[in-house]
Each structure stands twice: as C-alpha cells, then as structure tokens.
View 1 (cartoon, rainbow, N blue to C red):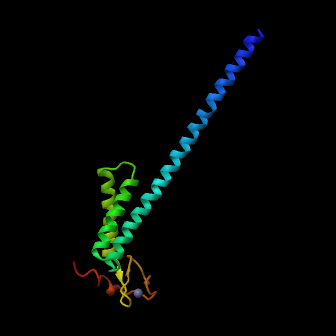
View 2: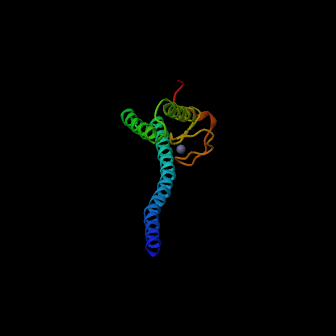
Length: 144
Ligand SMILES: [Zn+2]
C-alpha cells in the first residue's frame, strides 16, 4: 500500500516536472509571438516612414537620384520584409504609401525664402520658420 502511494506520488511529481516547463514554454512563446508582432509593426512603420522621408528629401533636392533610388530600394525591402504576408497585397500597400507621400508632396508648399519643401497644409516653413504663401507652392516640383 505504501509502495503504491509512493509510486503514485513519484509519478505525479514526474508529470508536474515535465508539464510545468511545457506550460511555461507555451505561455512564453505566446508572449513572444505578440511581442514579435508589435516589433514587426514598428519595423514596418519605420521603413514606411523612411520611404516617405526619402521621397521628401529627394523632391526637396536634399538627395540625388542615385541616393534616393538606393534608399528607396532598401526601405522598400525592409517594409516588405516586415509585412506579415509578403506578396502582392504587401506591395500594393507599399505602393499606396508611396502614392500618399507623392500626393502630399504634390500638394505641399515650397518655402519662398529657403526652398524647403513643406507638407500639405503647412502655414509656416519647417526649414526656416517663415510664413508660407499659397502661391509659393510647387516651385521645385515644377508644372509637371
Ligand atoms: Zn523656409
């Protein structure tokens, strides 16, 4: 009788000994998955922001064509890598983001004093702090 009780306790101990790390491991991996999702979103957001900044800098004349193309390729690669399902949908999303940046630029305002390109709706230049006039828009972008 004592032997059976002892064996049962040992068995229970073994089961717990094996089970607890598995349960802990599952929780840990669940938490890790959630964390990785957040990190991936952050990476994607950062890459898309970089892409937009590159577009702005290029349009504003801060980047030459070669630097811009290189930066754009790198940021696109990072953004696609960070997206959950690489493929057509992710590329569409990326193209949409680029299109948004272009639209913002096309409707942006170029400072008459320093030539800094400001985003749409800006009242003051982020480059020199001067007021922006409506008719000073699109000087750098030209008519096309
Ligand atoms: Zn300015």
